Image 1 (cartoon, rainbow, N blue to C red):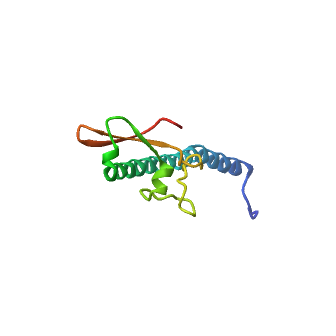
Image 2: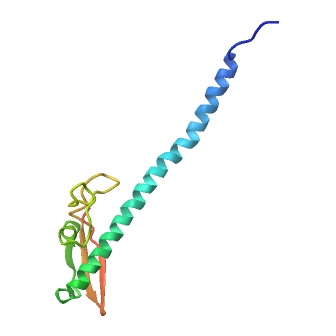
Image 3: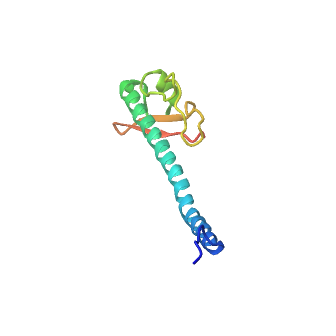
Length: 123
C-alpha cells in the first residue's frame, strides 16, 4: 500500500472554490458594515451639533426670531457648546470623508414659543 501524502488536484480546486464562495458572500457584508457605522457616526455628530445649537439658542434667546439665525459648527466649538474631535479639539471631522465639518451651518429660530434647529444644505 502506498503512503498517500498531500492533497489531490481535485481536493485543492474544491477548497479554493469554497474559499472564493465564502469571500464573495462575506466581503460585501463586511464592507457595508464599515460604511454603515460611518453613517451612524456622521448622523450622531449632526445630532450633537443640533443639540449644541439648541443650547446656544437657549442662552441667546433674545437674539432669535422667526427668521433663521445661522451659526456654524466651528463657531459652536469655539464658543464651547460643542467639542471638536481632532487632537487640539477645534475641528469636527466628517467620519465619511475625513474632512472638516466646521463650515456646516445650523439654522436656529424662535417660533411659536419654542427654539427650532435644522442643518443648512451647504455641503
